[in-house]
Amino acid sequence: MELTLTEEIANQIYDILVADCRAAESMRDSWIYHQTKADDFTHEWRFSGNLGFGGKFWRGWDAWYVDAYSEDYTQEREKIIAATNKKLTALREEFRVSSGQE
Image 1: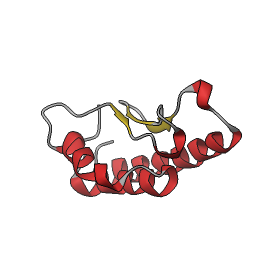
Image 2 (image 1 turned 120 degrees about the horizontal axis):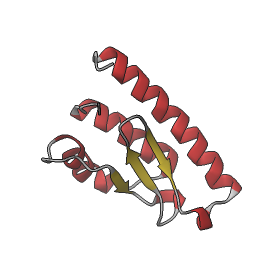
Image 3 (image 1 turned 90 degrees about the vertical axis):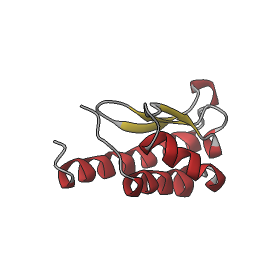
């Protein structure tokens, strides 16, 4: 079962995307809407940032993660992706437990 996101947790996710992946701050309001208020949340969100045009956040049933187009991978981008995904995994687990959505 997918976790229902509050504006608070959606903002925390986007904070990570801005800080680690240089997602545009100007996209935050749209992000919050599409993750918390839209009739059907967005499973895939292109933010580009320092991961290139293929930089995306994925909201799966069992994970939150970022990736990029494989042809755009560099050692630096792989490090960014790994570090960001570690933070997203920790945040998802913390949120899942604290919200009782286990």
